[in-house]
Amino acid sequence: MSVFRVILSVIFPPLAVLDKGCGSFLIVTILTLAGWIPGVIGALVILNKDTDRPAYPTYPTYPVNNTSRTRCEY
Image (cartoon, rainbow, N blue to C red; front, side, top):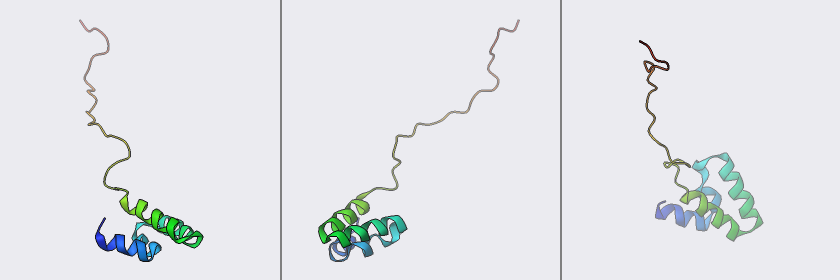
């Protein structure tokens, strides 16, 4: 989150989240119409959200060994 985005979200919140998608823009616009402070808070929350990090931890997946024996072979 850059300083420019923070200043922009304080001055005009919907413009700060314009590149985050139509849903974010719409939510912040509605919040701004309801009141300036909710719009600023919504914009800061959306800007603070880290999209590079997955919502859940990912673990390495290993290929399934197709040659494993499921029964005894003599």
